[in-house]
Amino acid sequence: MTVARHTLNAPVFARLNTSHVAALADLDEETNPHPWTGKQWLDSLQQHDCFGLWLTDQLIGFAVCMATLDEAEILLIAVRPALQGTGLGAQLLQHTEAELASEGVKQLFLEVRQSNERARAFYRRHGWQENGRRKNYYPCEITLDDGQLKTREDAIMCGKTLGSLNVSEGNT
Image 1 (cartoon, helix red, strand yellow):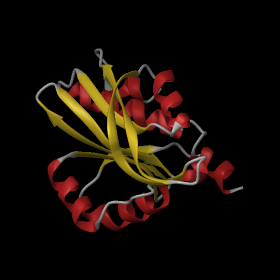
Image 2 (cartoon, rainbow, N blue to C red):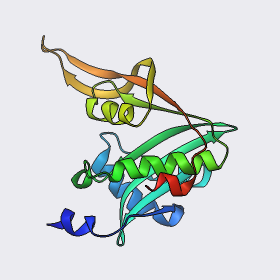
Image 3 (cartoon, rainbow, N blue to C red):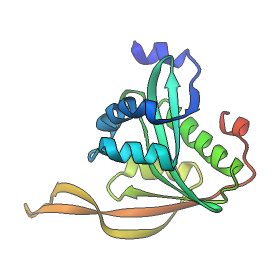
Image 4 (cartoon, rainbow, N blue to C red):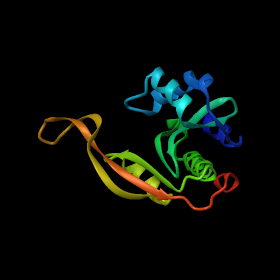
């Protein structure tokens, strides 16, 4: 019932600042197998583009991006697990892309865990291209078929060329 009630409310996108660190840390804990520390969040909020997705008064998604000249990397993007699959993640990604494009970003990059097929398919549906691999990039704990424990996982590198998006296009 909670999800149905929230879908009636329009999501609100807003830049995040240091006053949001507790809400970010809580949501990161829900969505990330290796959540960031409070210091990492404070540093990111002070140094990077951080966008929030709100329903009513609850932070339900975020994107953290590091821009340099006309390129940017999405360092972290997430939506509350109970709301994944509702289209809110697509709206957050589109809004983030549009905001960065309006700031002059032309190329956007991210990494995703090799095992995260759902996220990889999501990015492909939204025009991202898989274009490389970083060996042993992410920490993990995966038991292999032979019983051995794998402690690192590859990252799949993805990229997207941004067109002439604007913020209103990203909200459709």
